[in-house]
Image (cartoon, rainbow, N blue to C red; front, side):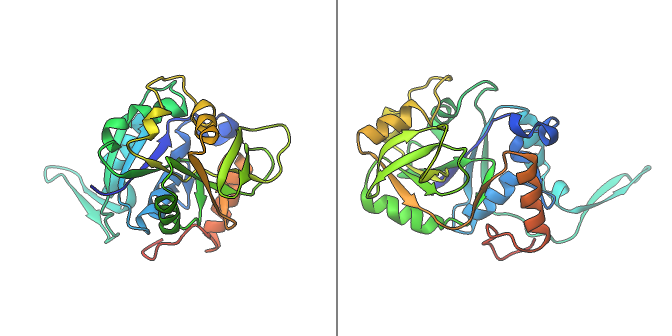
Length: 266
């Protein structure tokens, strides 16, 4: 079985309400394509082309995009009248992706969403996991090699951005303490882009809709020395505010998007 990338796509994006009222946060566009598409292109550049999207808030918007992917990403010619016809115009590269669009509940927390898709990944060796609202130039291939080399239950990508996120204390590569969104932050924070052992991670992820991934599961993994950090000092940027939405779109428009590591098309 191939490696799958699980992407958390169920949040409401309350901190970017100006842009996300009409659509789920992962569908907010960068250069005309949803941010979740950019994340999937990042994984595909490293050979990961199977995805499980954990849906919640306005899930039908995400389903509609992928169900009508060719129409959404190409020009369309429509002939009206008796000879009614629809023609896809243009030769945009068709993505060779397999996507599972999984309903995980509108009110479910992050840990509960991952637990809900267990059946799609538990027969694999491992799976990747990340949030549907952040892009990075993290080297997924090196991240996977790091995870396989240490043999623990999970890996998390550690980054150093603004001080409003959660802090992790590192001893070597071992995560000794995990605090989500403290008042003051110094050091590394949770940048997403996890790798999880497909057999052992469920010991920390019971099927509970109220379970928050970043709280009890990560703390227990840290305490048991089963969570190691992959340090990433390159580009990492979430889309949490309108300012960040504008920043990411400006980078893309200028052709200076560090996360665009793929070669084909815009």
